[in-house]
Image 1: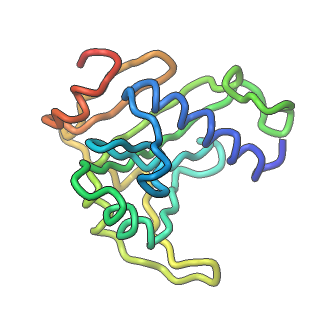
Image 2: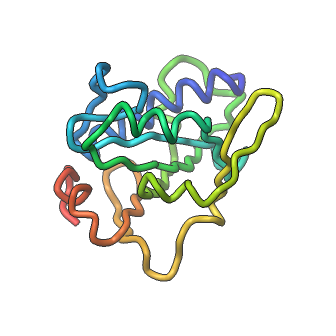
Length: 166
């Protein structure tokens, strides 16, 4: 499977997984954020772990999604996944059977504000790397069906929405 196709299919696959984990589904009238209802919004960024541990955020998303989801608690979900078969050997449109591991870090919306906006030809973008994620007990780590979540401690809105208890 070519890179762009894998990215598109993996985003769909992981969005469905995250939707099930947090019991949240996208309401189209709430704008372009991946998963949102009146109380909670999550924008998912995912990467195949063999390609890169870096995530790209379109700079407009930080402002626009906040404006489109007034009153909701917003979060970023940064997900790294592995495959049990080389990407170039995967055929078909369902990649779920090939996902061998999934690690997903959930961070508050304002957290990305610490990173500069870059202006390449296709930008502007904000770049975040796994090495930038908080450490020292910041996250509650939990195994859920299909992956592992890293959720900020004391985020009751997330805890209430989980389909599995903390």
